[in-house]
Image (cartoon, rainbow, N blue to C red):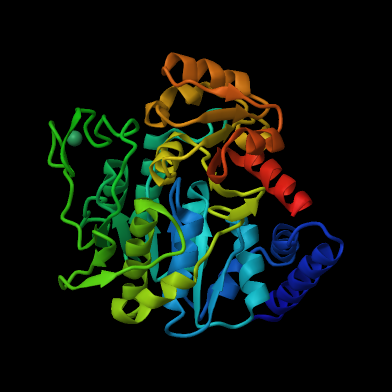
Length: 415
Ligand SMILES: [Zn+2]
């Protein structure tokens, strides 16, 4: 590395360590920020010489990054970013902290994918999904797909691992060839992880016609855009690889959605030459990520925490949750997005027949929604009240971002 980059990297590590010592989080944002102030090209310098995978999408990227890092770990040491630090400051800090590693697997906020592609020149980029997120802040889905597509046109050597089930992702991953400009479409490996949420992909991003669905297939009624055949798919409790071999996957994470994330991770690792048979047992080492899926026993209740931050992830959470008493908690503070009208995008009907409790700053918004949906519920003022209100056994907790953090803090305080 150039001297300036070495100094920047060292200062970045020190700043992060000081921030940690001061008890101000893990320091990765401030460390990366200072490093990039000293050397604006620091992320590029730290990336040079590493084989890198970027993981991006609206949902599942933290977990898929963990699973992919575990799978690529078959080959050697892997640098990876900590939860939440998924912008260039976090990537810079993660690579500076890891020192020299042959591999890196980085979670990337979908808005920053173009910038991080440019800086890191990755070997692989995995595109998971695109759906509506915080209404007052995030870009519209079709606009994100357009940004991804434009970024891939500039990096035709990158190998793309993409979700065949999401029309927006398929369109983004398949920019047209342009022989005049010397643009050829990127090499894409398709995986199928399922898509429960369809409400952001009824309109074709290419031509504006309606997208139709039948079973797992989808196609545009006005142009050739349609679901490509997937080389990696989930079957029963395992993953089928491109050769047709089936690998049983045992995870410590619940739900079919995480089997899909495992299929993605195996596909990412395969791009580095890792055989699925060697990687699959490592996936079991991934446990709860930043408290997501954590299970805590308290007063005879087994409490499981599921984070749901946007409509698509609420549907996934309903699917993961057992048929058991369920506490829903909603806040609308800054990190959550201030607008709760998305509650009406989510069908809460899957909760009918379960004991449902609600809490959080915006519990009354949730109450209206559940009432419209015909789901009976009970309002509780505090988490402890919810625990006392349910019989011994499993209590599922589904909460959005700051509500989730509040409940984690509450459990830490008591345990
Ligand atoms: Zn079309």
